[in-house]
Image (cartoon, rainbow, N blue to C red; front, top):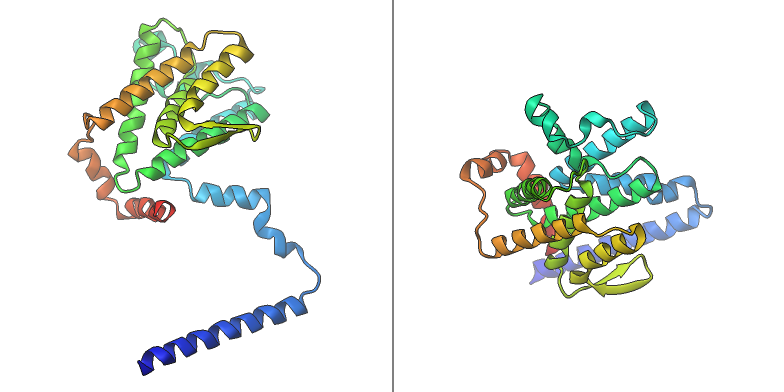
Length: 263
């Protein structure tokens, strides 16, 4: 009991000392300096957000930013044709990167692109963080979505060269089902239930772009298939794939650090 009293007294003394130091610092520094606001700049906030982004989301968003930025500076803001989805070139000329790079395009560099990639960054990053205990499940989700989107576009005869929008619809649907029942603010104008968000975006495509939202609906449909398969535990990562994660302590430590955000 005496030890506990001494510990409490020491803690109280330390707290008083820190408060005195803070008070004296406030009195000494009457005039704010640039250093006082260094942590609140857009650059600082972006750097902090990027550092707290999980690995796969970093790789995906980073690749999209790099290619879009390179297109802006080196190709007059035109996305290179050799990055588009084209099955003839993929299969006959072994240009195997095309089905992957097709998912990285969200329009030419500009304000619209920055808003869209930030949107994808937010939703994709949240979904990956949620799988901090078993991060391989997120990789399985992305692989499932990408494979079925490619299949759906091909079988549906959509002749789409870009699949970034489809993937974002897939991600939003899964996010919406994960946070089902919660209120979501839409551009600070009004709120809707999270599960209605994918349908809101599909309606937005129809109203603003004057076209049937086939790509939105494809993303929603595949997102639903994934949700059902996961609920029924029909999608399991193979052991060798799990080992790619568990054999890397530093990588697992990065994921484990996200646990505090959900506990």
